[in-house]
Length: 328
Image (cartoon, rainbow, N blue to C red; front, side):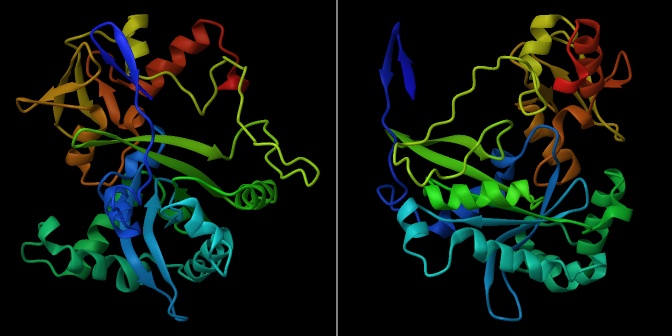
């Protein structure tokens, strides 16, 4: 990573979480409060649990529900050594925990076992009023599913997200094989950098990767790297608001509405919005409006003048300018 000082770019070397004296719990807290770090712009997520114990006394790190109604298990390891020195493989531990969530078929069940205890543990972060933790949890979960039209799909599938500062080749190989056999599992690499008192994170989605063979070659001990020479737009790299501003399909000063609400923000030249006198990223603003852990930014941001979501405006422009729908 490079930082610009004047006209000169200076390299910043990555550090380890161990060097930062950060534990797995520290990383869990970072992700619990900023889960959008590992979410696509087309994804909404509601954190519903942390360190949830199953009947066999195993503990999953973070538990969430996504905009498709899937229960998402998020497992975190601090460094590569933490993965390699485990008795049980990282990915297999996550699969066992996910299997225990597959037995949940009703929202009340998830609320009783997971979400209500989570709200009770972090009750200072919620506005309960006259409600009990169970009542608030069932209300928030049902609202989230209803707005995302996912009530009928609740927990039909389970997803797994693995997060670490680095992965060993055996884990990546196993996850690639599981992906090819329809197990929904992702790997995110979270690399920390320190500059004075500030810590920055570079987030990379390693798997799944389109058209990339990540199986370990038993005869090849060379270091693997991801190389993409394809510059075409895919659903994994849809254009952001800054490019939409460059296209002219939205403009500085346009009013953006949080879908289904009366909340408005003015679009700024840098892609942020000004709402209630505060400048915020669109994701941060929408998170506050809806009270979710992460929000599908371009689906829930509505352009007031046209009445269209930013996702619709983006798709229309790309279709009119010759983007192949199979690449979108």
